[in-house]
Amino acid sequence: MLILGIDTSTDICSVGLSYSKKFIGEINIKLDKRHSERLVPIIKHLFSESGYKMNEIDGIVVTEGPGSFTGLRIGLSTVQAFKQALEVPVYSISSLEFMAESIKKYYSGYIFVPTIDARNKRVYTSLFKDIRKLNLKRITDDQALQVNDLVEILNNYQEKILLFGPGIDNYKDQFITKTSRNISIIEGIDHFGGYDLALIGYSFLKKGINKDYNDLIPKYLKKPQARINWEKKFLQGD
Image (tube, rainbow, N blue to C red; front, side, top):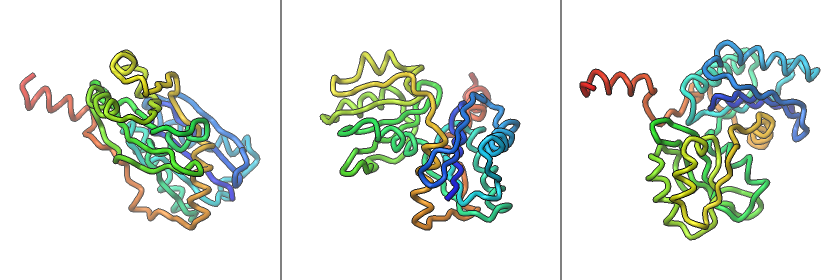
């Protein structure tokens, strides 16, 4: 099965291909807000270099959020178009769950806490527990939290905790100085690869999971930053 994985939840776009569990290729590039211009050309380039054709795709998996409003909208609308044109099954996964699934093969025995910067001293986050056979159990829903609130929540746990993801970088001083000793912080992980996402998609698509066109909607968790700024300026009189 040829699986295409697309992650546009952060400024770094990642597109990957796997044939079943075999690595075919992956492209990672920082796009900021240029996803609408670059995503489809990146996908076409990946197929051109891999030797496969897009009509050979057996399935697609895409991150649904939380994360970049622009990136998620473009990523999911692109997959919607592919689903209609290619008539292939698709699957969408939480950006945070994807991050936790990607890192679990390198660590064990932790509560995994992936983070994405939500701006204004907030992060998108969720908690996952590492259980038997490298399976994950979701502890909390995806949510947008103030950094201090997340620190307080994590300090209540006695288990080993692994805190990671692009949400760490802007607030690392707060995390480092305020978290308990049982919390390990991994800095510098600003993206997770499309190939890993394709592997996750392979496991779901092998089970026959198939998202409907109308199910492919971004999970934002909060209002767009432009809307927040507008309300602050005009509704609160700032």
